[in-house]
Image (cartoon, rainbow, N blue to C red):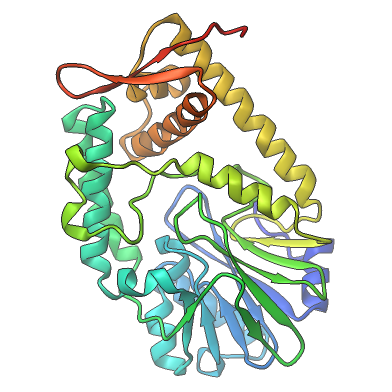
Length: 352
């Protein structure tokens, strides 16, 4: 679980000086509260909305009231990415306020058919899990859990599609839109170059390493989600590392406002630490593969043991992400057994 946002911190004070108020909202997920951000400017803007729950809605209304605002005052709602803890209340808030909803253009058809899109994501995840050795019973259990979680999100109508490099213009600032996929295919960050501020959502979090979950591509047809024979698994970790490299070169930045946990100041040091972390994990996985060929499921078990069903896809995504790095480096190769299960074997020694 990530650390909580500290309203008394220097970062929180700096954000308020720049007209940005962090409003943490409760979620049912292990990550803890999500940080939504009210930009007190023209237009009055909310970045992310929290999960679709009465508890989150009550908390939002209460915190807005402390700032002398109400939901009906909102003039723009911005969604940073596709995860339900960031968008669940969007449609409710847009309906009450009449505010337009801005998000990455590729999310428009996905969120417009939310239930079918989420079901396709679940079928895709099941196909990935079965291909990489996770037992069918675990896949079925995880799909059941996922269906029960789906209500924390909701269908959303995006009325202002955003593109890479586009700007959101306010009275007192301009935010540049940057697509930074990896944690999800739709991760979007917002950069105020004049004040050296970055609204980073879940792309970069100080207290935990953002998990590059293997996700179905946004443009993939829904009807092909469970076709394992045609499955092209995105290399989410490699995509994420490339996005981190781009963010590392941004600057100067002196305030980063994440989607979870406290704000921070040194994005370069944090990103370099994340690069070292992922290299260590890749090397550890290579040592395991060098001992004997293993499936993705076996690698995940070797690193994290028999985790809860809700964590099975997350740990598999982590393992496969680092295997992708090893394959790209020419250290590991993917092969398939007679049942179509993928195994990974070493093609170089651990010390080469």
